Amino acid sequence: MSESVSSSVPSSVGFDAQQHAYQVRIEAMLNSLGEGLIVTDEHGTITTINSYALKALGYQEGDLVGKWMPKSIIAVDQSGRPMQSLRRPIIKALTTGRTVTSYSYYQTKNGAVMPVHINVSPIIIGDVPTGAIEVFRDLTKEQQLDVAKDEFVSLASHQLRTPATAVKSILAMLASGDFGPLTTVQLKYVEKAIQSNNRQLQVIEDLLNVALVDAGRMELDLEYTDLAHLLNEAVSDHIDSLRQKDQSIKLDCDSQVKVLADVQKMRMAIDNLIGNASKYSPPGTFIKVELDRQKEFARLQVIDQGVGIPEEDLPNIFTKFTRLPNEMSSKVGGTGLGLFLTKSIIELHNGKLSVESRAGKGSQFTVCLPLKWSAPS
Ligand code: ADP
Image 1 (spheres, rainbow, N blue to C red):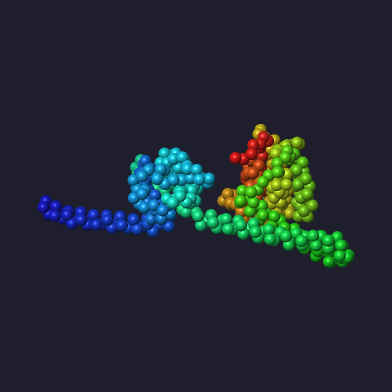
Image 2: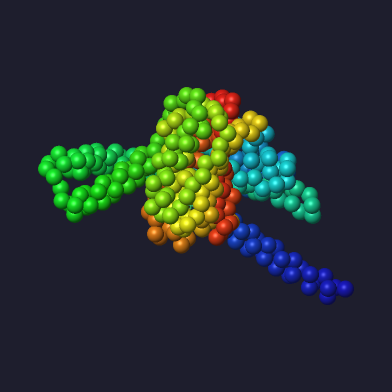
């Protein structure tokens, strides 16, 4: 018996030392993390916070540990208004038992506002929620880079548009014989130059529009518009280029489907969808454009028999600069901006753009536009 007591003393000391070493390692690990980490108990009271979080928020450990998180770390919306406690990710994770991911803004101790990406997971032990763990990332640098990139795109495209437009006028004068008659060969090359210049201007226009969308400055000039009429015009304008590619198109539409729309921008969106249906389809295929009235919205569909889009790529195609590596992409030009702009334009009209597609089986893009319209909030 005495043997067992004496042997238990050194083993308990060893256990404490081991536990201390373990704790030191865990703390070192948490403090080396390049992201903010906050652990709370089941009520949302902060129990642990790492160095990154303290530094980013400008607090000392004593300012926050033991305090209720929603009141001690202030989250605000984009306009600086404090967020309600119940809407905070930490509280949502604790009350629902689910992982919550969101973007928000934290107010630092000196009042500055820091954009953050937040991920909070409940800590469940034996089915019982015992707290939550939040990891947040300071997005200040990423946001600054985004702004710089948007400014660059906007500036570069403005600077490019002026000379490209001047070239357009000169080429048009050349082609129409303003500087004397051209030989057949000369005219052929001037026409090629006109095509290239048009493509160049299209890319510049897309970049300028993307810059407007990113800055939240794309504005709509709304009027009641007959979508059937707009589609008729768009389809007619595409017929020649489709014929050259041995493709055909059919329009099937209810007459007089009127929606409130910016004619020029809606036309840009429709042209993008028809243009893509043609670009990503081989010769000999058929494009169907349909318009009908549903209960509360107009539904416009562009259906092709082209290369289709693999399921795993579907969520990415509306992201700017996305181009999928399919058999057509290398043959046809593109910037990966068309669908981003199309979606942005449709959403500015309070509508929705969706896609159904299967690799090798063609694609179906659907636009739904409200028949009764209220401005987006
Ligand atoms: P772009 O055509 O300039 O590359 P988009 O933004 O219009 O850019 O389209 C993004 C990508 O989505 C395209 O590069 C293509 O891979 C794919 N895509 C778009 N429309 C279709 C379609 N109708 N069929 C198959 N793939 C398509």
